[in-house]
Image 1 (cartoon, rainbow, N blue to C red):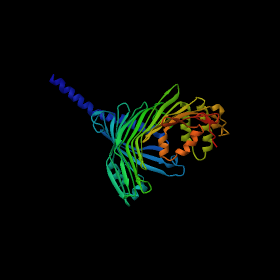
Image 2 (spheres, rainbow, N blue to C red):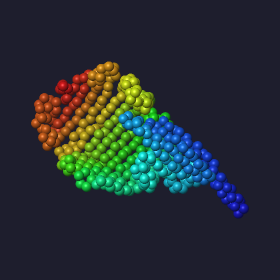
Image 3 (cartoon, rainbow, N blue to C red):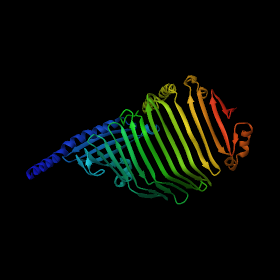
Image 4 (cartoon, rainbow, N blue to C red):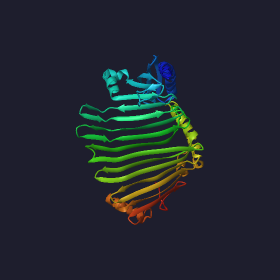
Length: 431
C-alpha cells in the first residue's frame, strides 16, 4: 500500500511538472486568439508584439492603438499604449481570485504614449502602482478579471482632487456572456472654496449576453440586466445659490428579444434632490420600448461603424431607409412614469409614442408630425404651481379647458394624431 501511494505521488508530481508546459502552449494560443477577436473593435486596434514562453511562465507585450478620429472626427491623432503582461501557467493557479484551475493567471501593466511620459516621467510607475489589472484565463477560454484602484490625492494650482478606492470583478465567456460587479468609493474635487463636486459611492452590476455569441463584433447587441447606483452627488460654486445635492441616484435596465424583436425597460430615479432651497423626492423616469427590429439595429450599428466625413450623407440616407423598415415593425416607446414628490404633494405623468411609417415622406420631414401618435396624461398639485408663481398663468389654461381641477390636483390628457394636438380634449395650436 505504501509503495502504491509513493508511486501515485511521484506520478502526480511528474504530471504537475509537465502540465505547465503543455498548458502554457494552450494559454498562448488562447491569448493570441482573444486579441485577434478584438481586431474589429471601433476606434481600437490590438497587436501582440512579442510573446515569450518558458516552462512555468510567459510574458507578452500588446500594442493598443486608439484612433481618436473614431471618437471625434475633428481629431486625427492615434494614441499608442503598450500592455505588458506577466503570466503564470496552470493547471493549478493561485494569483487571481485564490486557488483554482485554469490556463494561466495574468498580471498586466500599462505604458503610456511617449509624449505623455516625456512630460510626466513617472506616469507609468505611478499609474501601475495605483491600478492593479489581473485576470485568469480558464481552461475553457473564459476570462475572470479583477481591477483594483488605490486611493490617491492630487493637487495642482489650487485644485485638489481626491480619488477613493475601487474594485471591480468581471467575467467574459466564449459564448458571449459578460458580467461586471463592483464599486467605487467616489471622488471629490475642489478649488479652495469657489467650486466643488463630490461623487459618493458608485455600485455597478451587469449581467449581459451577446445575441450572436461574439463579444467584440461592432454590430453586437447585448441582452440582459444592468444597474448603476450612486449614493450622492454634491455640487457647490459661486454661481450656484447654495448647494445642489442629489441622493440615491439609480439607473437600471433590462432587455430581451423574441421573434427577432427587442424589448425592455430603462428606469432612472433620484431618491432626493435639494437645490435652490427646494426639496424633491422620489424622482422617477421609467421608460419602456418594444418591437425594435434586431436586424435593423445591427445594420444601424454597422453603418455607425463605417461612417466617415466623406460618406456621411450616403450613410445617413441608408439609415433613413433602415429607420423606415424599423417603423414597419410598429415599435412602441413609452414613458411609464415621469414624476416626483414635492412639498405640496406628488406629480406624475405617463406617455406613449408610436409612428405610422405609411404617413412619412422621406423628402418631407414635416410629415413626421403627421405620422406620430402620442397618448399621455398626468397630474400636478395646484399648490405647487402657486408656490412657483405660475398660478395666474395656469388659470388661463383652466379657463380654456386645457387643464382640469381634480381635488387638490390639476390634471391633463394629451393626444396627438394626424398632426393635431389636443389637451384634455381641446385643440391646442402648435404655432
